Length: 226
Image (cartoon, rainbow, N blue to C red; front, side, top):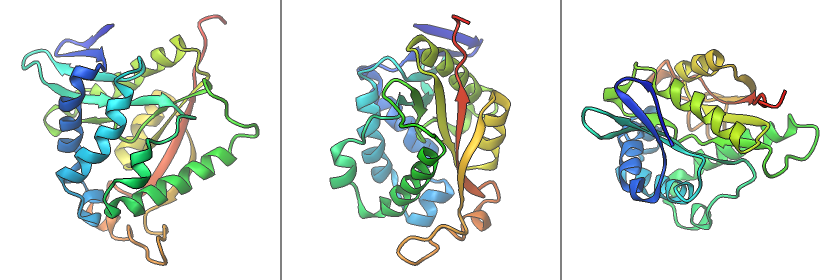
C-alpha cells in the first residue's frame, strides 16, 4: 500500500524490516527536544522506548512511514494502534527511570480523556496515533506530518474505527490538529503538572515557547457507507 501525496515523499505501511530505520528517525526527531533536555533523555533512552512500540506496530497494518524518493531514507513515521492496546510489559519494567515523569503525565492525560467518553471505550473504536509521530528536522515544513495523519484517517476508516485520537506537545502540533479537523479533549499545562511534588516540566515553555501544554485530540472518522 503506497501513497504519493507529495512528489518528493512516498508513504508506505510500516513493516518489520523498517523497524531499525524508523526507530532511528524517531531518535533523531526527539533526542534534542525540550522534553529530552529537561529529563536528560539521550539517544539510547529514545531507542529503547521507541523500539518497544515500533516493533509491535510493524506487525499490524495500521502505521505509516514517509520515505524521501531522492535519498530512499525514512524521514518520518506515524505509529498507530488500537486505543485499547496495553503498553508492552517492558514499558513498565525495563525502561530507564528517567521516563517516569513522562509516563505519569501521559497516564494522567489519558485518564482525563477516558472521562470525556460517557461509555466504556471498546476495542476497534478508536485508532490512536502515538506520540512517536515525527518528521526528521531536515524534512519538516513540507506537509509530511499532515499527510501521515490524513492517510491514517483512511487507514482507520478501512479498519472500521469510529474515532482517531492523538497527542500534541507543541503549539505547532495544536495548529496542525486543528487544520486536520481534530477537537481538543483534554490537556495538561507543563507549568502546572506535578510529579512527586515537583513541577518538573515548569521550565519547558522557557526552554522553547512552542511548548505550552500536552493535549489529546479526537476526530470523528466518517464512514464511506453514509
